[in-house]
Image (cartoon, rainbow, N blue to C red; front, side, top):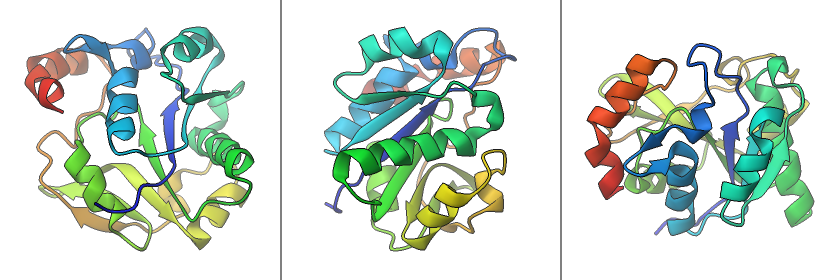
Length: 196
């Protein structure tokens, strides 16, 4: 098994299009947050940090299964700002800049443990790719972590880092939970979450 590494689960978006917090959307009897936490815990990833917003902070803390929860009080600043808060929390916990960090948006749940094991084998910043689609989670490595830490919060990650594609078998990698139609598709494919 590849060496484990820290994880930042991004769950700070306002979910305007969905109209309710994505982090608590349920499939196969568990929220997207719980599915993500449990997968990373099976891989012994640590620390795992969840970055969330004010609205979801209390319930996310209750559901956190012993992982750290960090509040992003200004999620409108952009996802990179949430990533920076998560990396900062990891730095505080381990006392240094980590060598590598997995970034996993909670609303991109179409990956499994085997995909993460493949991602962790990489020695450079990488994203998952399957059937011509690139997706999340992503791995940040070395100097790229410093680039993200020092970037402006509103600049998208793809404009800061060039990711190597890690090709995996992941038929649901393009799954992105933004609308009720996406939730319906998620639940139609609940078998994926029952076995992963």
